[in-house]
View: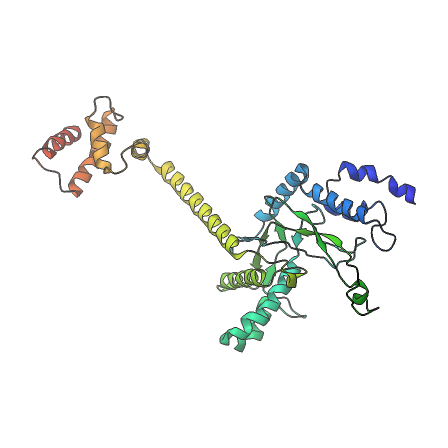
Length: 364
């Protein structure tokens, strides 16, 4: 059996493109217990870290993430939350390495199951929001059941799995915990100052996770408000309490300031894109001369001058931008309208000369 296991080493050393597969199938020798080889455990953990940064893995995961993200609800819009330090979900899961971590089964990247997020939000709702809000405390049972359901009936809010964003630079990092009294922990002897600490390496995650919820209840005009409330509740729980294991040691918490800044930046990008789309729609609806005038005004170097002044000076040029009679007439209409609005449509100089030019173009 040992010889057969040794054959796996070259395969692992070449680099498997799946961190989860490495951790589950490519352990070449016993790494834990009295006869275990600690170096083997560190080697397999480091191999998983390296695989998570593999370009082929990242490219495939990015395509999958984009497809998954496109299917998320738009209301409320998903939010991207960045870890303050380290996150470890699935630490206590059954594993030959003593410690586990929850990775996406297909792509091998860190994730937070929706069930874990729902449990966190439900507990935070009961412990934090309920006791501090009088109205919520009065109707706590009804609200809590609406959002999270009961053992017999599901709630109206669906908590989606949270995926790590592809731009996260270090999906997996090597971590260590050091139990100082291992024999006391298993109940065999009391703790003493003579116990030797036993370092236990494990993997944790860092980066930005996309979090989303959606309404899955009956059609209601309040559905959007309830979904936004649930998302706000979940974000507060992740900021204040954190997700996963070792939260009492500071693991699993998310950075409120970075997340709010990222959300603001995302909203600004969406607003900018919306403005660009509206601008493109306006341009498409314009006539050729209207587009020509807009392009001229947008590219004009004098940003302080009024539009009709810019157009008037261009009409005064012999080799100006507007040469055809139809174009000059359309521009002259705008210039006349601007002069009248500024109450400078007069016979006296210098306005009289300008008025005469415009009247000549308009045939008045």
